[in-house]
Amino acid sequence: MWTRVQRLLPALWLALATCGEDLPIDRHVEDLVTIAHGIYGQVTTVDDVGEPMPAYLPGFAIGVFAVPAGSVLGNPVATATSGARGFYEIELPAGDQVLCTAFERCVLVTLVAGELSRIDYEFSLGPGWSRGSPWPAP
Image 1 (cartoon, rainbow, N blue to C red):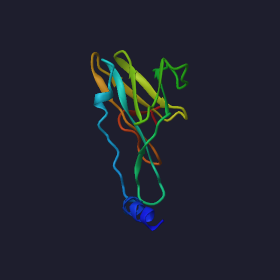
Image 2 (tube, rainbow, N blue to C red; image 1 turned 180 degrees about the vertical axis):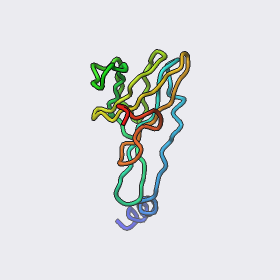
Image 3 (tube, helix red, strand yellow; image 1 turned 120 degrees about the vertical axis):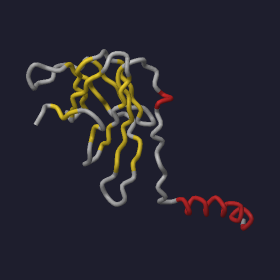
Image 4 (cartoon, helix red, strand yellow; image 1 turned 45 degrees about the vertical axis):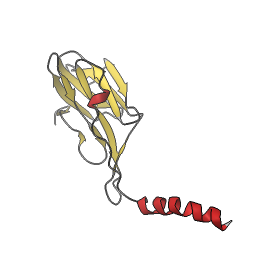
C-alpha cells in the first residue's frame, strides 16, 4: 500500500505546485487561418474577480452585418462560432461591415480588398472588440 502511495507522491506534488498558477494562453492563431480575405481573430474571456486570467472562449457566436441605412441591423450576411482556442474566421468582401456579438456589442470595421484583418474579442467588462469604431456611433 505505502509503495503505491510513494509512487503517486511526485504526481500529487506536481499537481499541487502548479495549482493556481497563471497558465498563459496562446495568442498566435495565424497558423489556423484558411481564408484569403476577410476577418479572423480570437475570443477570450477574463474573470473580473481576483487576478485577471484570460481563457479561451469556444462556442462564441459572431455575426457580420451590412451597414444599414438606419440604426437597425437586419439579418447577418455571415456568421461564425469560435472554436476550441477561441479562434474564428469569416471570409468577407472589401468594404464597411458591422461586426457583432449575439448580445449586440458591435463595431464598424472597414475591410481592404485582398487583405486579412485580425479582430479579437475579450468577453469581460473591459474593451470588447480590439479594433473598429463603436456602432451605432455614440
